[in-house]
Every structure is written in C-alpha cells, then in structure tokens.
Length: 368
Ligand code: UD1
Ligand code: UDP
Image (tube, rainbow, N blue to C red):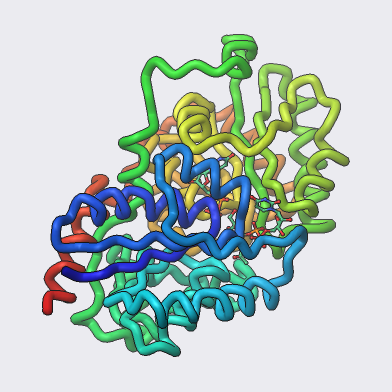
C-alpha cells in the first residue's frame, strides 16, 4: 500500500484536486488522506459539498483579510506535526496558492516526496500574478513529480532545470471536473428571469494585484459599456475577499442589468458558463474551463500563464485599462465573425483523463 496525502486550501485547488481524489480513493493500492488547510472557508466548503468530499484533517487557518505571511506560517506550523504523525509516501499539492507553496515547503522539510499537479505554468514576472508566480516557482524548485497540463508547461519546467524524467504531461484535471457538472436540463431562477433576447456576460475578478484603483476603474468601464448596450446583462458572483466585495458593491450595485450575487456553487458556475454569451475574468481556472466549453474569454489581466488558450484563440488578453476593456467588450458584442472565431477555438487542456493518468504515474513511481 502507498499513502498519498493531498493538501489543498482554496476553491480552485479543491475543484481541480477533486477528480483526482475520486481516482485515488478507488485505487486499491492507495491510502488517500485528504487535508484542507482551510485557507478558504465558505468557498472551499461549497466545493467539498459538490463533490461529497469529507477531509480527514482540516487545519482551519482562515482569518478575515489574512496576510500572506499569516497563511504561510499557519500552514507550516499546523501541517508539520501531521506530516510527522502520518508519514505519507507522497504529498500532492495543486497550482500556485500560498497553501500550495507552504504545504510543499512543510513536506520538503520532512524530506517527503512532493507531487505538483498543474506544474510548469509561468509568466516569468514574480509580481504578476502576485504572489502566485513565485508560489509556483518555489513549489517546482522542491517538487519530485511534475504533472504538467500542456507541452508548453513541460517546456517551462525544462528551462527551469526540472529533471525531464520527473515531468509528465497529463492535461488539466479541471476538464475532468466539467464531466461531473455541466447538465443540459440545468435550471436556475436568475437565468430563467433574464430576457431570452438578452446576452449574458459572466464576470469574475479577484486578483490581489488588481485590488484597489485598478479594479475600481475596470468596474466603471464595465458599467459604462453595459449602459451603452441595452441587450447586455452581467452576472457577477462576487469573491468573498472583503476588498473585492467593497469595490464591486460600490461601483456595480444598483444597475438593473448588472447582477451581483454570492459565489456560486461550482455546479451552478459551470452551468452559468455553459449558458453565457462570453466571460470576463482574471481567474486562472475559468480561462481553462471556458476553452473546454467553447466560450470566449476576455482576460482582465496584463499577462496570463495560460498562453496556450491565447494561441488557440479562446482567450483574449485585454489588460485592465478602462479603454481596452470597453473596446474588447464592444468588439465581441458587435463583431459576429470575431465572436464565432473565439467560440470555435480548440481546447488545449486535454480530454478529461488527467486524473487517471496522474494516479497511474504515482502508482508506478511510488511502488515499493
Ligand atoms: C486565494 C489565492 C489565489 C486564488 C484565490 C482563488 C493566495 C495568496 N491566493 O486568493 O491564488 O486565485 O484564492 O479564489 O493563495 N474569504 C472568506 N471566505 C472564503 C474565502 C475567502 O471570507 O471562503 C475572505 C477572507 O476574508 C480572506 C480573504 O477572503 O482573508 C482572502 O482570502 P485569501 O485566500 O487570502 O485570498 P484570495 O484572494 O481568496
Ligand atoms: N467558480 C465557482 N463559483 C464562482 C466562481 C468560480 O465555483 O462563483 C469556480 C470556477 O469554475 C473555477 C474556479 O472556481 O473552477 C476558479 O476559482 P478562482 O477564480 O477563485 O481562482 P483561480 O482559478 O483564479 O485561482
């Protein structure tokens, strides 16, 4: 038997680890231990409910408006005794959050092998996204198995001097998750209420480097563009980060065609994506899901580590300048050829078998 401990703490990590946990649980030679750091509370619980996952351990670290130093130290301090007690053969982490980086560091200090799911994403700018680019580079420096979603991610790992025999291109587990969630007969009261001739734009925005004036100006640009386009509705499930809540409510509230709602359960969010006209986001995971659902995305960031989606054409890197946001929205709303091209772009993130591949690789590599 091999003991695999999966550690995650935020909504996107949970969504992308859940399909893999399902595989590991079914594998007769694996004892799967699930640890949540609780970096997120409500938004993590939503995903655990959706996938019916009960963690074996919850480090429950979340505090209101937590700092990066607080998250890092809490994860290191609380995870270390658990690693010593449980002695896993491998610790799995996902992506680029502070939970990812701190859990990897805790495992490294105990000399426990680390498997990094969604390894190799890069912008090469340590402040953008902040602190995620540094988190993933640190994790890749100390990891032992790299599960890269694309060939481009493999290339990034190779030029970062990661051992080639430890890199496996698997596709992205987020595509696996979509198989569980998108339903043709889905119903939601808000969607049913929107006039059928109107076009719905799904919006999310939460990144740390955009919070403050940049985010406020972006929201003003979006509000003005909605005013100019009477057949447009915006649905924005607002992230629970207090800085994001404040800006969203101050600038976007009170418009009859802008709907600020609580974070959606994953199943609802995926079905909203499947039914929207296009998406505007600074999220990482949403950029990948949208490509698989053939939905155009305007990326509200100055760079993206999801270059594959830009190359295939489903993502457009818009930036955060108000004029650029307005131009990009109007182009997609008024140029049907451009819109169709973005809808028909190829999905570069695999066919939904990433979790099975990772399970097989771990089984082969950790066999005693
Ligand atoms: C974190 C990750 C980011 C990821 C995002 C996904 C870091 C540094 N950032 O950013 O990479 O894209 O999650 O959503 O790891 N809050 C709640 N309830 C929740 C979740 C958050 O109240 O369920 C509030 C708390 O006040 C918390 C704040 O949001 O302190 C910020 O949470 P935090 O995890 O530090 O940052 P995110 O912006 O969520
Ligand atoms: N998501 C969700 N509910 C929402 C908004 C997003 O379940 O209201 C999901 C979305 O489908 C994607 C993930 O959350 O899988 C993205 O998480 P987030 O944007 O918080 O983080 P990032 O991917 O930017 O790290």
